[in-house]
Length: 149
Image (cartoon, rainbow, N blue to C red; front, side, top):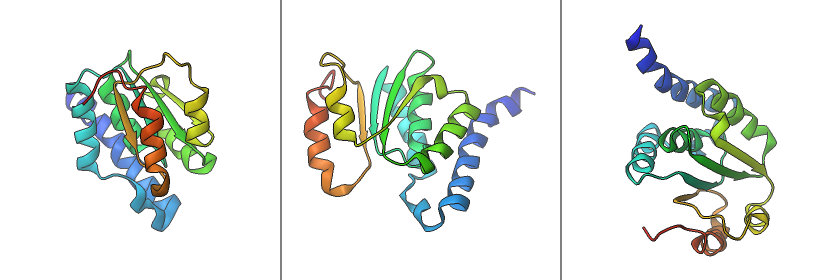
């Protein structure tokens, strides 16, 4: 019984990878890999992050990994523009038991960032969205970081 409980979180990640491939076809290459997800979770936990933001969520694999690293008290804001692909994310966040840690905002990320309270700070930021806008996302997030990393 205990062994199955330990495997269950990884099963959720594996299931999400499979569903992403089935439902998005060739777009599944936009998803981070399993090793990267493990690294994200470990890094998030290692730095003691409690607040995070993700620009570009796709089907939610990286968000799931980060949310697991944040722990039950952590909060992650996810910015994306696709209801279709983030619906897959929401389903799997629920299955993994981390949905209560994630605040998904469907809107252009720069609009979402501009609407956040001025005093909101993040311990961790992950940018994985439209490549031409990386510089703008970086500049918009930099002043919101709680510490330099």
